[in-house]
Amino acid sequence: MASDDFEPADSASKEPVTPLVDPRFIRLADQFFGMFAQPARGGGALAVYLDGRPVVDIWAGWADKERRWDSDTVTLTFSTGKGVASTVLHRIAEKGLISYDVPVAEYWPEFAAHGKDEITVRDVLSHRAGLHRVRGLVPGREGILNYDAVIEALAESPPDPRRIRTSGYHAITFGWLVAEIVQRATGRPFTEVVRTEIAEPLGLDEYWYQVPESERRRIAKIFRPISPPGIRWNTASSVLSWVRPMRGLAEAGMPESFDELVHDPRVHDSVMPGWNGVFSARALARMYGALANGGVVYTDRHEPGFRRTGTAAVEHDVRLLKPETITTIGQVQPAPSRDYVLGLPLRFTLGYHRPILMAKQQPQNAFGHYGVGGSGAYADPDLGMSIAFVTNGLGSMITALGDARLARLAATAQATVLKHKQSEQ
Image (cartoon, rainbow, N blue to C red; front, side, top):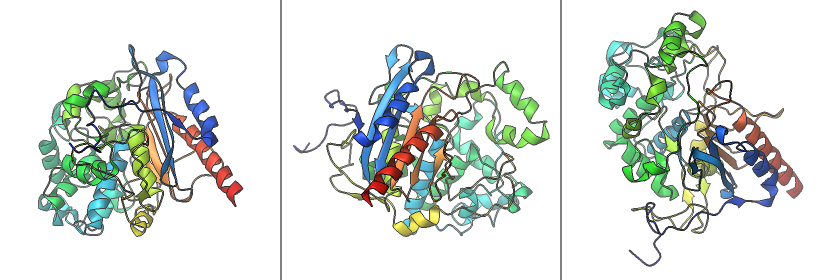
């Protein structure tokens, strides 16, 4: 190893990361720490980039009942991983290996079955492929752990005809579709492409859909079950599948015994980018920090968490995407009526959605992805800011499905940056 190399991620000699709070963001940090004052709330981490550089990197609470959340803790973030998977695809598109308006079947011939020959990559990224159903897609509780079986089943599935009119949120199937398009276009495993296109350029490890055995000790334990209060998961999903307004949600996001599966260690052996991404807030904020800053993020070997691992030798500024690509992927895709899965008018961009803040002023051009339970991240190119929040304390005491923590944190971060930029004018 050269004298200027960093130690690998699993080295016991790696220096601990020091929390970072730019003085302008003290109020945001106080707000975050207040969210984890009680052990029952679990733990989490918050990171913010501004103009391509880190300004906040903090953590608090508990990774499990006997272990505090520390600088190296990572957690399952559910749909947050859709944004990372989409960014991987956009990197490949910039290399000319994928075109948004080309039929998926050009890369994945089997996909053309049952009238899907005209479905494009853009349709997949904007949840208009008509393949939202995961419930019953493959047999058995553990069926979705079998990537090859799922891919074959998706190729053999007929599309929902409602896709012509509007979007239908692909809550879980989205990740498999994106991963297989990337694999077919590159001829390489999706996880390898994630490593070479995201982790190595950015100089951080924690972009995992398959978590290395040596790193699993870092994964936080999920606090609170995801089942509806007082109702068994399979019972709820079965009942909802017969209730017309909720049928799409049951079909798209409630596979058999999913409540038990999220605690199964084998989840970290599988590739399911629609929901099983394991990240740190630091890693998410760095990726989105580039997308918020014209595609460029700056590298300082002394910044929090930065290190070399394997071939990830980063000592220079990183261009993740071109500005024109960021403009393209941040544009809302047409969807003239309510999403037929969620029953709401949603604003999808190419693989992301517009974030929602607890503020009167909503960001106009921001994009990212939130996940069930509260984790999420996004880039705001207008402010040059990214924010990422990850947690194992799913939702609230009422429901684990979600809450407004990230929306509140993002509102404070947005107000802080707006005040700072106005004072500079």
